[in-house]
Image (cartoon, rainbow, N blue to C red; front, side, top):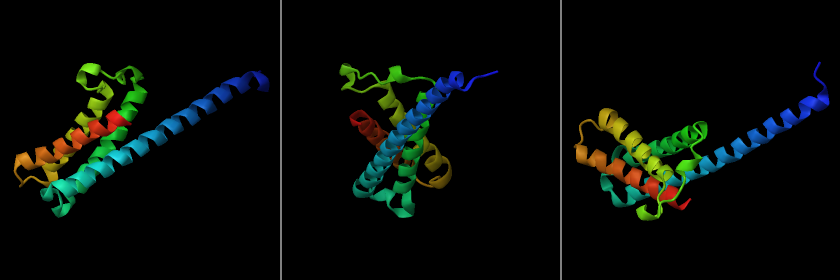
Length: 142
């Protein structure tokens, strides 16, 4: 028979961990929104090719999804040690670079294989490169 007082500490610990995960997830979403807005703004402002057909929006959505997906993978794999800034690489960490790589990948693949198949590859890759680079920069300073 389980007594209420014996089970109470385990319930409290699980509630605390849920609140901690929720707080982390909120921080992830805010970071992802910030990265997506910056990607959309820079592409719209400096890269006119991204305006027709909402290509800047595709890159922004891909950046948002990549950011959240990368954070979930890091949380599930307990990858806290990837967030160590490297002074040789301008203070970038593996976590920062991973955000950019995934943003690049999730922008380039759908645009190159689905929505922008008729366009030249250098435009698709340039758009994905801008999204990836900006995701790295945003992650570096958050």
